[in-house]
Image 1 (tube, rainbow, N blue to C red):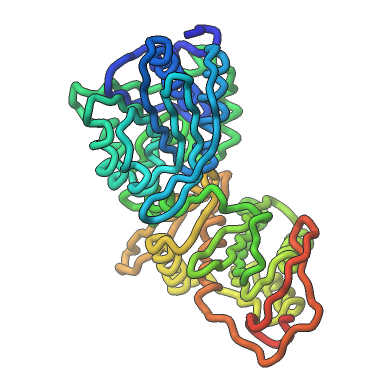
Image 2 (image 1 turned 45 degrees about the vertical axis):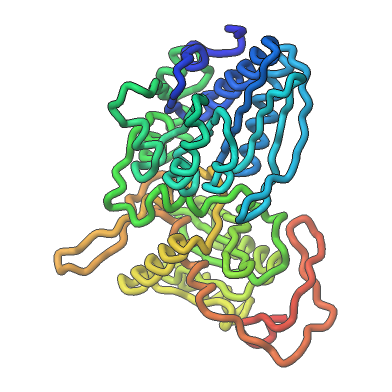
Length: 447
């Protein structure tokens, strides 16, 4: 192992040869990079001894699996002087087909990287590396399916940043058994070991105390009062969500949380595909004028086939709602007053959508995750439930309410028209035409 490649905390992790290892590291400190070196080195050593070994890397999603292979395994293999063959292939389970990345060594050792779920965790007999395990969907089911895979003497490596207490990573990391080698490295230890990071700049930049404590200080956050747990949020993350280029021309539902001064102005765009709402775009701006807010919303209506839009009409939202209804139709734009009753309806409908996994949100969006987790349900003196979120520099759970408004917009079915649109095309933000489909709308003259 070349000491020049790694910081002391990474070298401690790589050099430990225990069969079961679990590490909790701060964000962007090289936990995947260090572990993939151990994987690549193990395959090289087996190859030099005329033997062979097998490793499987299970990542949060397909993009993360590819990054682990491209930025980790293949780079390390090259640095170690290994001659390998890299390729992609389809991996089929009973539920679906996945794209798997593979690296094969001359003597037959192989490394496979693919998205983690209970199905992909089965079917191998191999050493296993669980990357960002706390963020895997169904982490407990994955663990149940996985453990027999390594039961015949294979090694197991688990690394992650914390993600609340409701997942298997928390159970493993806080266990008091002697079987596991456990290592932690927060941002302070990483910087002390030489990692070039400006701690104060990062803390100010993340602008959320809970997110800072979890992502960088490795603290287990109490989720007792959180309306959406981190595990629930993670279960709806997808690496293809949040990309406007992925818009397929389907019906779109929009939520708008009006903000000025301290709070954010947020637009959430959800496209319905089947019975799932895919996040296509989240627009968040601070301290912008109402004219700019109006322009941003107009642009969303131009680029997407908006069926219905729900807007925060409370207080300063009265005029923006009125203006949007005048421009885009009162049937398509609905103002929602944030009364106690309406907030309960929005929050309940939003949580049910997450619980049923009928929504996909961007993967690894720290600001969004912190915002969704910030919302809390409390009981007032009269026993009436209320939803509150501590206001900080990141806003007042503004992304959460915009998301819930968009979900609420999708709750009313589209109205079918008796005529066909003629020659009308929309364009997405790259100016590519998207054909408007007849029969979807919320009111007069939508197309």
